[in-house]
Image 1 (tube, rainbow, N blue to C red):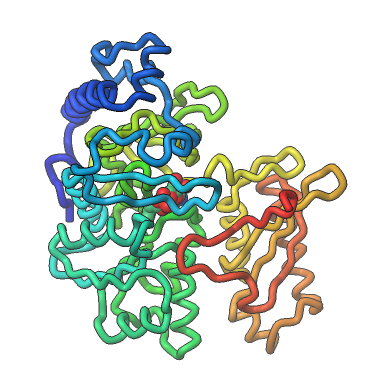
Image 2: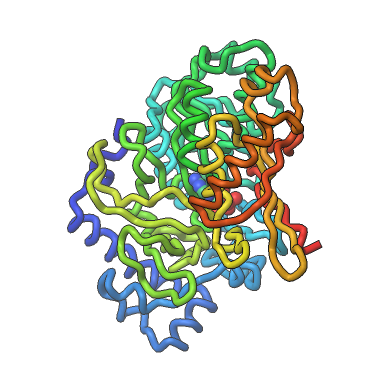
Length: 439
Ligand code: DLL
C-alpha cells in the first residue's frame, strides 16, 4: 500500500518544483535565524535570494557533525524554547551528544514519513506492530511509534531489550510487523529457537530493520530464519530520525528517500564535489521543511549511492543504496579500505558462519592488523557435537574465510571461530569494531 500516492508517485518535474520552492523558503528562513549559516553564506558570498533552483544547491555551505557539537546545546536552533515540543539525541558515543529539537509541525512531518515507511514495508491499517526500537532520547522508538499510529495501525511500545517479553508478545498477541535493529532481530531469532519456538512459525510477516549497517546476506539469513520480509529503514537524528528513506517490500532494491522533505546529494568524501548517480560517496541531506533544527547540506558521513530508475512498486522517489557504513567506521587495513558490512556480506557467503561477529583492529609493529571473530552456525555445532576450534573442519572453515576475504576485498586477516554466544549481543546498535590501536 502506498501511503501518500500523490507524493510518492509524483512526476519528476513536479517533485523538483516542490523541492525548489521549499528549498528557497528554508534557506531564507535559516539565514535569518541561525548565525552559523548566515556567517558561512556571507563568507562564501552567497545571498539567500540567489538560490533559485536545485542547481544552485552546491553553492551553499556544508554543515558537519563537528558544527553540531560546537554549537551544542542551542546554537543551531531556529525557534525559541517555547515553540519546541521535543528533544532527541543521537546515539553516538564520541564526545558531546548531538541534540536536536522539534516543533509540533516537525513531529507531524516525521510521523508522515514514518507512516509512509511503515506502508512501504508492508504495514497496513489494522495491523498490530511490535516496536522494539529503544524509546527515549534515541529517535527509533518514538519515530516509528507516531508513524505506525498515523497509518492507522496499533503499536506495542515494547522498546528494545527484555527478549523474554518480546517473545511473549509475539506469541500471545501475534503482531504482523516488528521493528528493531537487524542485530537485535537476530538475537530474537536465537532466543525463540533456544526456547523451542520455530522462528518461522510466528505471526511476523515483515520486519523494519535499521539504525545500523547490515548486508544483503544478513537480510537473506533474517528472512530465512524468521520467515518475514526484512526491510531496510534509514534515518538519523539530525534529520528527525527513522523515515528519511525506506525500502519497499515489492522491490527491495534500494531505499526510497522521502525527497519532498529530505533533498539528497552524494559527494566525494574528500573533495565535496558532486558524484554522478550510481557512484558511492558521502550522503548529503537538506531538510526542506524542518523548523526547530534546520539542517542544510548536512554531511551525514554515510556512504551510499543514488538511483533514479523507476521501481517495480510504482514509487518515483529517488532511491539510495544500502548504507555501506560511516566514513569514520571505514577500516584501512594495510592500505585497503573496507567497511564492516562488506566483511559481513562475505563471511555469510560461507554457510557455516552467522552474523555474530566483531572486527578487532590492532597494530602489529607499524602495520594495522585485522582479526575477524565470528561464531559458527548451530547446524555446524550440532554436527560436531559441540564447539571445538581445533577440529580439522574448523581449520578448513577458517582457511576458506581468510581466502574469501583476500580474494573479494583484498584484505589479509586472521579469522577466529568463537565459542557460541561469546560475541557480545546487542539490543540496539551492534558494536562491530573493536579498535585496540587506540588503547
Ligand atoms: O539510528 C535513526 C534510526 C532509528 C534509523 C531507527 C533507522 C531506524 P541515530 O542514532 O542518530 O539515528 O544514528 C544515525 O545510524 O547516520 C547511520 O550511520 C546509521 N544508520 C541509520 N539507519 C541505517 C541503515 C538513528 N538503515 C546513524 N543502514 C546514521 C545503515 C544506518 N546505517
